[in-house]
Length: 253
Image 1 (cartoon, rainbow, N blue to C red):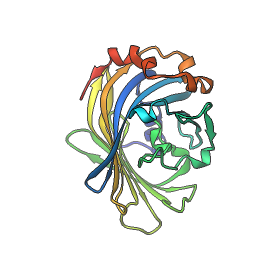
Image 2: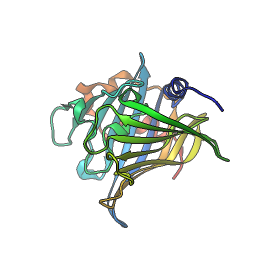
Image 3: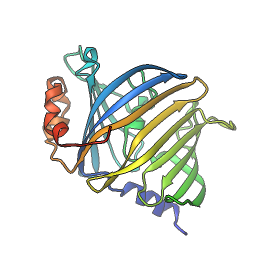
Image 4: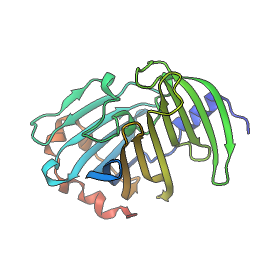
């Protein structure tokens, strides 16, 4: 199978993850084999004018209910718009895009891990390979990161060649053999005609830290009012704000 790099990246950027939708996920943080804590998170998103706005709202534990993260991303672009509103804060605060690789709320996920579109503009791809696996064809991209992050200057990306979502991402320091971070998406399911992973994990092998995001329920194509995704409204959201989507979503676990 022959595809150019441009075709591969365009297929990924054009993949269908739903023009709008809702998910509830459990986010469990592990230190070695010990589970440290678990968050329950509501995720709403909406695509409009070549950008995607995503809202992540912590519904459990109760002590953190109301904490919210809002991100706006664009295909190919590394830059993001990020806001976070802590439960005890009156207003949301903006997070500079340069901090997009910082860990979010004590998990192993960064703000950048929360995006649908890979920031392919920051990659200089130097090798492409194709794996015709039994489940689905896979494209593997090896790239240098233009940002030359001190923590990970190289990246290896495995894309599903049918659904075009990332199945695995590994970050490496220069000349290192073992990755410093690993993103993995597994157990793909079709919900409302959209393929989505039931499990996404991010691990830091050197520190034995790992965070697992498990899909609880999902709904694609649901109407998401723009007011839900406005920075000024983050402080007004409560758990019951999401009941309309939560009660209609397909349950997975």
